[in-house]
Amino acid sequence: MRAFRLPVAMSLAFALFAMLLPADAQPATKVPRVGLLRLEALFLFADPFTVTYQKRIFDLATKRRLATTCASLESTDCLLIYGTSRLEMFRLAATYVDKILKGAKPADLPVEQATKFELIVNARTAKTLGIVIPRSILGRADRVIQ
Image 1: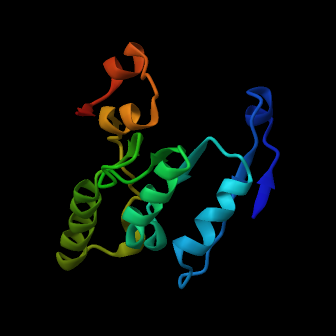
Image 2: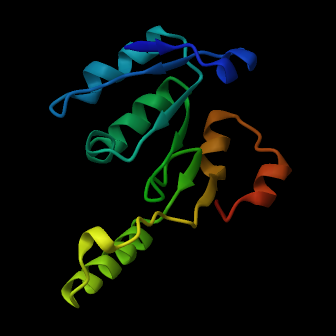
C-alpha cells in the first residue's frame, strides 16, 4: 500500500492511499488491511478486480462502515457513483468500428472520450452507514437509489 501526499488532499486534511492488487488477489485478504489504516472511505475504480469481487468488497466495507465511491455506474451498492455508462462507451467504440469498416484509417480518426458523466446517490447505503446526504448533492444527482 502506498500513501500519496497530494496538496489538495492535504489542504482538506486527509491522506490518499492506493492499494495495487494483483489480478489473482482475494478481497478477504486485502480489504481487512484497509481497516488497519482507519480509513473513512474507499474509491473503487471499474477494474477487473473490483468488478469480480464487488459484492464481497461492499460487504466488507459496510462491516467497517466505510463509505464507497465508485467509477462504474453498474456498482449499485456504492454510496456515490460517478462515471460514464458502459453502454455509452460501447456506442462510441461501435462508431469507430463502423468508420474503420467503411474504409477510414484508424490513424486519421479523432480521439474521442466520454462527454456525459452521471452522479448517482445511493440513499439506501447512506442510511445503512448513518450518513446524511446534503440536499445540494441530492439536487445535483442524476438519480437517487432508494
